[in-house]
Image 1 (cartoon, rainbow, N blue to C red):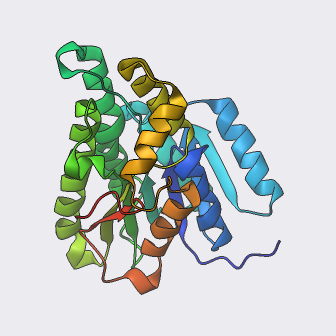
Image 2 (tube, helix red, strand yellow; image 1 turned 90 degrees about the vertical axis):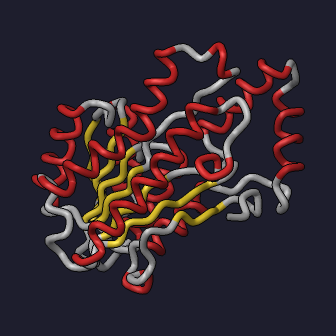
Length: 262
């Protein structure tokens, strides 16, 4: 496969599965040089190997986006490999919830660290060490959730974290607008990913239902009657980094089959 490079250098967190993997692939297919990360070194190595086998210019490193030290090393590695970062996709995150009265401190703080604090840590490092903004038309896309807009029952930590990502996105977008850098959030609803399986398992246990019964309930809530796919979410992310999307900023855009209506 011969792909013309666009000059874009993209950093994608949580890039070895689900939405992150679909995004890394699409960005590379569009001609970006892509540096991805995840916590498990073996997952990073195998993902990079598979994408390179398809002719894509991809590299990566293991790192925990909850850790300031790991984030610094990650961005250093991306810059050393490809030069200044021009596209950041903050995708890494986790599910988590339950009856609020029984949520532990450890769960609450880890969901906030994984989903919200990590977005700040990675973004700050990319704006400094990563030199994002030096190249005109730089882009930041944060993966939030419809749950950050309208709340998820038994998902208070998750909803709080994703609501924070949306607010952070809008504030940063206005801050960086004079530089021409755009900042947007993409808000998936139900997406068929490994995390979605874990979510259904948790609800099945809480509600004393089978996973198939939980899935049927979720399908009934979605006007299109099905989960979105990682590729569909990645499609919007990858559009937002194009030149055509240069006037879209400070937005939180849904990919949810009609589940969210604002």
